[in-house]
Image 1 (cartoon, rainbow over the protein chains, first blue to last red):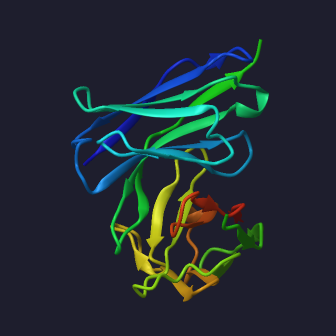
Image 2 (tube, one colour; image 1 turned 60 degrees about the horizontal axis):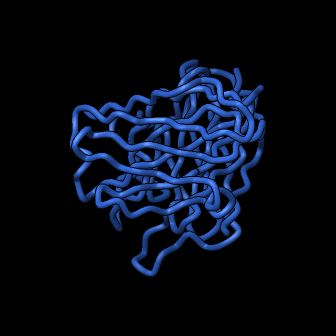
Length: 122
Length: 111
């Protein structure tokens, strides 16, 4: 059974860059039936999709974050990562990594990491 | 972009009784292939979300059959036939038709 685990700093200063890594175990990140995603949840609020990456490196991003976000994949380490530039307090959230099962008879986030809280504060 | 709207936002329930959550999309989620790309997730307190339903009505692996999804186009419903204590949490619908994927505001089920 696949497992996803987020890692990275829990505190980031305003205007700096948020960097997180998701390590995938129990399955290959290079499968062509999955995308790999970041989703965030501000404290006490709902879920917001941030973006996806395919093992080939192709990406899709939320339009509201596109100017500041990049998602990269490292197939040799079975990891993918999130970088969010020029952060503000509004970027404070629990960040989840998740697996997107693609296909005309699927299209769903079928596995999630436990999430990691990132606080933006000086 | 597609906007998802859930109701109610808070739902007090009694164990053993049924419960129902509605979700409405700003655009049809019915694809030309006949599938409705609507998912339901449950986020229990302190946990990450888990998939309950995909394609509007198909239960994910391991999901009890007291959960059912219905609807098509823009209107969808999640029903719990008999609520159990372990069902408390926040339920989210999500459109999976097009990017950017979007979640509803969430419905808190409380006993």
